[in-house]
Image (cartoon, rainbow, N blue to C red; front, side, top):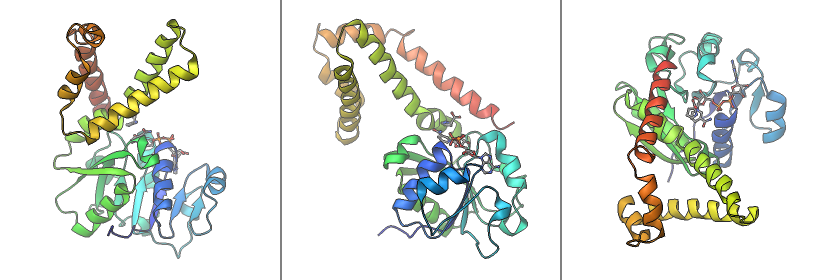
Length: 271
Ligand SMILES: NC(=O)C1=CN([C@@H]2O[C@H](COP(=O)(O)OP(=O)(O)OC[C@H]3O[C@@H](n4cnc5c(N)ncnc54)[C@H](O)[C@@H]3O)[C@@H](O)[C@H]2O)C=CC1
Ligand SMILES: O=C(O)[C@@H]1CCC=N1
């Protein structure tokens, strides 16, 4: 059986924080607090009486002490959010989902002993199909790591990395990755217009092809290369298309440059 979820204080309930929070609510989150400037919208959206919605950490009632704090503001707002934490919260374990911001950076806004874990989730978390990857320093206790895993397992798959530097590659691959897939869908839909396919049909073709291929990739024992070969008849239509896409300057170099740009940006975000 899955570990019970810890009570939380979620700071920042936007696209990513909000997606995670909705999963946690569905998975019996104990009474928790959500801090966001959009308090009114969030109170309506989640219409919950058991959670506290607040526009500022300072308005959280004295009787409420979370077991964990989840930091989900934009990276540029991290220090402002941490330094405005009242002292009574400063020893609670903090999970940061911020791109780029290292444990050392975050620690400067907390105390030398606050347990800090970094997690990189992605937006398919909203439907329980997310991929979250976490890094914790060696001194973080097992119960804190287990509580972190329980939270992100509610949103899909979860894995640990041993070295913080790997979080850049994780961010470039699975954190930003859904956008690459959505852009591929956008491009295919735009191109479909040239072939006079009715738009609703083109939507179905693109969506079901991406969905079916992802599901096959996830459930099949075959490698991506083997699955690709199963589609590709010698001298057939797929081979004709792949002879364009597999040119070094086409997908191989383009994707390599794209991931490199994401990694570089992740490093810059720590400044
Ligand atoms: N959107 C994505 O696909 C992913 C985002 N992330 C990370 O999640 C973080 C949030 O990103 P998004 O949800 O996309 O941004 P967002 O802009 O949708 O959400 C940020 C939220 O923080 C709130 N906020 C700003 N300052 C605050 C403060 N001082 N106290 C409380 N709330 C405050 C804003 O009102 C907003 O609702 C970023 O650091 C990003 O790197 C990580 C993985 C994926
Ligand atoms: O674009 C970003 O910076 C964030 C991190 C991963 C996905 N979105």
